[in-house]
Image (cartoon, rainbow, N blue to C red):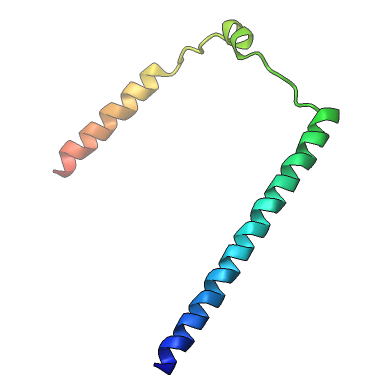
Amino acid sequence: MEALKEGFFIMVIGMGTVFMFLTIMVYAMNICKKILDIVNKYFPEEVVNERANHKNVKKKSSDNDAEIALAIAAAIHKGAVES
């Protein structure tokens, strides 16, 4: 019976420690959020309009299609030879 009481006591101490750590962590995260809100007020991030930039960017066409086809053919041939 004494071991059961001791085990329960150790469990309560461990769970209390975890609870206190998590509580402190939540408060620390909230403080960091407030600090970052203040910093962001004075140093805001640059807003980039993705739609405007997307219209000006053209897709690059692949100039090495023949090389890619050759590499695929060589790989298929190597697989057929090894089998």
